[in-house]
Image (cartoon, rainbow, N blue to C red; front, top):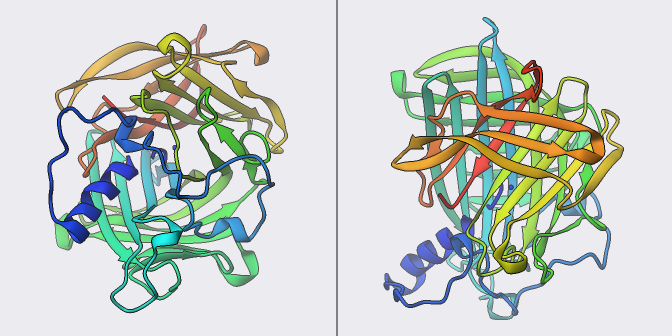
Length: 379
């Protein structure tokens, strides 16, 4: 949790620069959770479980909520069988609640957009970031998302579905740089399984006080296409995972960050698990896990049913980052270790974080049993 995420603070910083000028935040300000995602947002629509998700409507934008993202990660291999990872994420941040929106015009703005792109292989990790503004009543802006046919874009970075295959097939195109500095991808993604909802009616509570998000995933993506690194294109194939979340207050003010796993097991099962640091009972961490079968049927889901424990750290960008983890899900008799393929996966974006490809191993035998992605924020 693209994911989570991060984005409110960036919105506050950028909207301050764009709309009101730059002002320093007092050092005595009350904590607002990681990246401001614990900031109260009473004037916005609040995420809850009162209604089920509806498609294709919910593939699109929800501008009455404060924050939202479309978050894709992929575990690929090139023609030589060498692992390669990538991320593409589009974030939306409402700059003001619905009651304060200006009337639509070519100059009016009530939404901020941010996109991140990352490509990794071996020691190489390349990242890029873009920003845009739009009005929620217009669909012809520099950035935006339409539900049917699905299309998410910022400038010429684009994730979209053909009209007849809405949210079952996609094309993804995003590039940066020229010549030997050029990197990015041109990919085709095909869903090989169903959408998966996390929580009650697609509402995933993140805190004891009820803060959370509407949250669903498409974890069954098969990917083919071309990835370019250092100006050199290469054919790739592999697995993808697309997360969708929107909320107005994702965390509590005391939660300092998260560790988020999306794992493809070799037996066809998928596992999403996360640890939110702080903010639980007596300041404890909160965890959530969702394990589902190869056909998309839920096997185990719930809060505090999984244990996520760092086993080793490495110094990354001047921070001690956990790059090897133990993950235990006793209900499923699942004991695994998850390790970063390389520690150099730091995203040096407006709000920096770690995001990279991982390998999954059986805890006892140490046999490789899957691949996935790990996101870590607040370090």
